[in-house]
Length: 144
Image 1 (cartoon, rainbow, N blue to C red):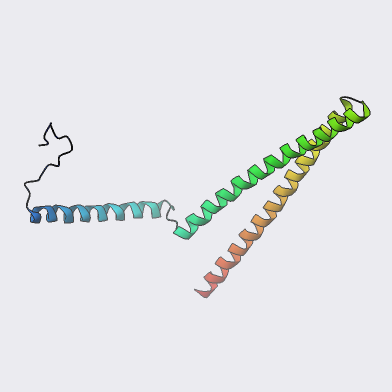
Image 2 (tube, rainbow, N blue to C red; image 1 turned 90 degrees about the horizontal axis):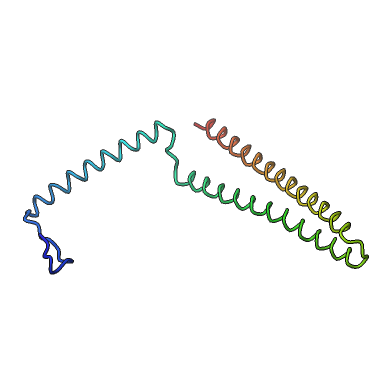
């Protein structure tokens, strides 16, 4: 029992080292058994991925998030830059707000055009990677 005056004191056990060792080995065996059961369940569910496959999935998710941010920023920048150009031209020519509105729509069109081109390029790259993986799997299957 711990001492109330010394709350950080360590309790001592009355077990012998042999008893402690026997408990540790039985716990280790049950943990190994549990690990085996978990492994079988993961394999049965198709969740047994290698470290390399998990790394690929994580890199893929990071790349997708990066691309999403890039596309979003490109659209916003196109809108802001074109609106600023339209505002400046309106200021010089005294045509407020018509050129700013025109350039706002041009900026939106340019931003969406960039987003579509980027998405098509990413799709082509993903299809190429999938094709290479399929070829690699087919060639390894032929060797076996």
